[in-house]
Image (cartoon, rainbow, N blue to C red):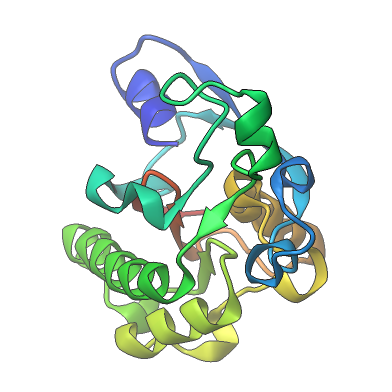
Length: 207
């Protein structure tokens, strides 16, 4: 969303359509319980455009660090290691994850990036009306919320129903909250994401 936000801020476009679509079921090894029970398929879209203050995106921050790339990746099938009969037979076109190592990086990164956007906007965690984290797993969400001191009643989660839908997870959650009436005009919404690359970021917005 940061790229689209920059286009709008610079006046290069009036509206931006942002789409997150995942078919992760194609890339999971159903004999690998560390990954196959986590990931799900999903798609969501949002239209971003300029709004009048005080509504809109108040702060955003995004980072990536390739040093952690092999914590969550697909070994073969790309330009670095093109698919061959051998890579397919070895199962290298499936998602590989180092869960314990990734957990530590995810919790630390999502906490830090959330604090940055809160500090930039001059907002405390207890002022946030709704926190929508990337739906990686509930343990990561609970750990981040504990570190931030956020109210559990203000945290939204749907991973128990649809799993980790990667780039679609936050917009799906956002849509569910809008449809259910959980989000109201003027609410402060914090969204924080983490994913392969590894990449992480957060956005604070006023609805």
